[in-house]
Image (cartoon, rainbow over all chains, first blue to last red; front, side, top):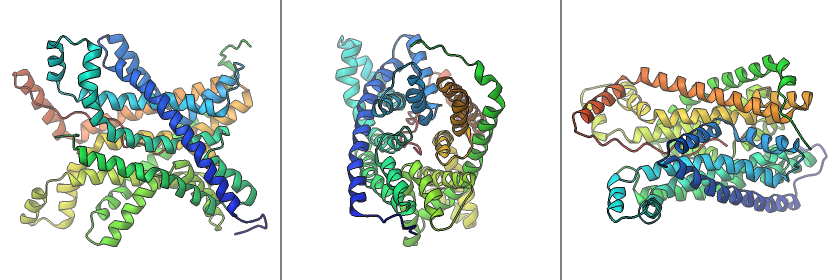
Length: 220
Length: 252
């Protein structure tokens, strides 16, 4: 339906295309920052110190219990009352780092803990320090196990970036909204936006599934 | 600028918050019940021997799982409106949630169905069980039991994803937070309160589902007790590693 507001043109399509770039930038930012945080969370979760384990557990439970949207609002609108006015990209990056770190930390902890106990004991017999054991023995094996779920989670991260649209960060979803505000063809526009997300996420999903089959490490 | 957290302006709003939380819970409950029912049908249909049916089902699952929930809501609410199908915000939000959770539940349940050994189905066929009874007793029940943790963590993610319904101004918890904070100008406090409410809801759902699981799956309880007994007698039984939480991810 057209209300005489102009129609969807190549320029609009180009605009949507360029906004994919910002979706990818935000995804990369969230993944890199989240991985660093998640690695720390994982280390804390398998630490010898009980208080550290507990703190990490509470952190994970808290973050997993709160929607990302609320985290975004807290970081973006909440911090602004302290006089820090964050750019939308930074706010989205911080909120997603918190969110991603809790999930990745939990996924990776599962993978590290799935490593057989004798691996730890053997490393101990070689007089490896705890860090050496992790770096040289456990993590190289755990990475194989963790790759499929991590790539699977990457798909979630790309989809999550759509939430950054609500704080005005112009990525794919926001670009769709902006175009829709000018020409009001919501079905067409959001279908195209959805198709773009699908084109980004589907290969990753497939890759994750293929790895799961190929590495075949989950439960044998 | 110095700023002090001050929750007192929010106190008069507590019934509003509770109402929002209640609505979120109601939406989630409806979406989960209907969604799991639809998801079960889709899971069985995907295994169907009639290729078009299984292809349609896998297309549905892949499309829903690889696009953001927010875009799905927009497509459903604004998109259908341009065809003249106007829905109240709540109906649109719940419908989007059902479509979303059904796809995830279908994939989870299908994984459970795949894990039913072929021999068991053949054995049931030899006993002359009807197709429906095989489906229910031999395939679905053990599958649900196996995938129950994955399914419930999906429900939690769905509950959180319902926050996105605020974007089409369905008056659930997040939308209420937006109104309250523009009334009181206490944005940080409002969002902290709402975050806490979501946390409480999550913990409540977690507790409820784990209790329900204990009650529903007696077999699992017995198996665990036997494993504990074995461990006490010095025969350590290898327990399967716990599946990574939400590795297959949520609605987002």
